Amino acid sequence: MDVAGISAYPIRAGSEGGVYARHRMPDPVRAACVRAGIIIALTLSQLVVVLLCTLAGSWLAFPMLVATLASSVVATWSVLDIWVTRQQWRQRNGVVSVPSSAARNRPRVRRP
Image 1 (cartoon, helix red, strand yellow):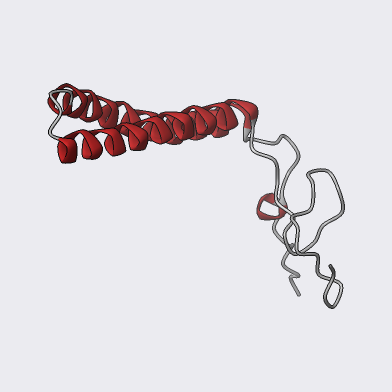
Image 2 (cartoon, rainbow, N blue to C red):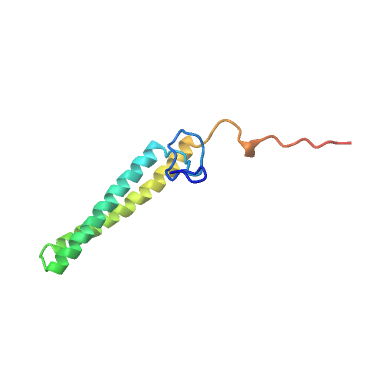
């Protein structure tokens, strides 16, 4: 439903600009984000299992705790991987050969 011409849903990449229009993430950065999201979801699931095993007094609580701690290190690494991949992509592909507005020639000064 549109209210005053503003859609409640984000505009798809490649369409005309709008309030929610955003540029598409580069594919390597998107892949790193998906990887990190899956790893974080699995780590949180392991944390719930550890909590339930602890409440039940199961022997599985300690091994799952160790696995959850290892997964939290991997999850932290995957979030850093997003940042490193983004910076690496910007350095390799972010430079455009066309002069931008910041790279325009200086205006000439008139001399009397």
